[in-house]
Image (cartoon, rainbow, N blue to C red; front, side):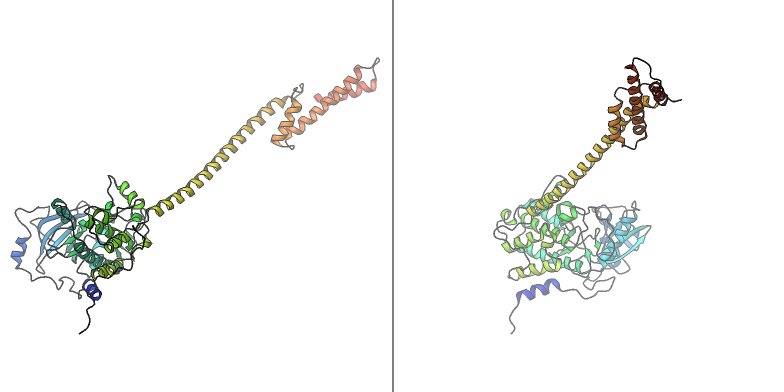
Length: 466
């Protein structure tokens, strides 16, 4: 008899894909009740009723309102054409936003590509009265968020074995999502559904991103739930499969400790903590946590996406090894406490800030230089204008200003030796000095010298003009 291989058994249990099912009726569906009974079961007197409750709409007998959100409402309904109960998700009537409609269509297409018992099946989709709809598998049980709330009230959390079982199912479902080249982007306890047998199913693909198509959300736009959001997703970067791993790690942390890894009063505070704060080790809050499970959880919560599990398949592999009693292989190794890289993230931020501050300082210096240069140039223009005003008499038949020589020197420094006023001003001063010298020579003679007098007169005429 062949030896038992617990790892192979665990992997076979969690990674087995169901056989391809008809598009409108998975093989696992129970026998359909009679149409009359099925239609009556979806509308109960004490249920919550919505706008479509009690109506026949798009081929469905619409019953109780199961929930509502930003995009639409979910009803329990009966699809008479194939005789089955469904969860009918309908886009809000008031929503005509083309991006929301595209995202809703993408959800239908994307979820329909996934085949896994751990992912809520999409049976059908269409449009009625201008409203888009999805017919989904009904999961009769609470959400994981509701179960967490119940256990907090009761004062008892999930055991490590329960956590491992649930996370192994979640990772298996996520692996199917990632194999279909999708990123969920909003994994949280409210989007993980429990059935009556304790099975877990991934639901609500309203924020799904198709990796092989252009995203409906621009880079720089934050989407998701801050309490479970990957650091890079909170910064507005386009999320990858590793962002889903982080979110599932946050859910695992909450199952182990009954509290999320971070809490805050605002989205900004939570995003900052996801990026730059170390979470308390799960074992410090829940002393019975096995080290191997804590290591997997903290590997999921690494700040640097490259240090997390690559996708749902690699996470499921390590969880299956723990389930089989074998040590995980992909977890972050460290002596003593396992850290998630908050210090490195802070250092990277500080480095970016230093670069930013250096660039800002250089820009500030450049700005000051330009401002100083402009001020100098403006002051220079004022000085040149003042000198020109003071030297204006040199261009007229008038006495030369007493500061004309110094002013011409300054004007030459500011305006250059080729400036017309500098050239003409110096010629005028030279003529003045020549005339003054000839007149001085006449003053010292006892008798007039006709030749000297004529030269002095010619100099004066040249000075004042004809």
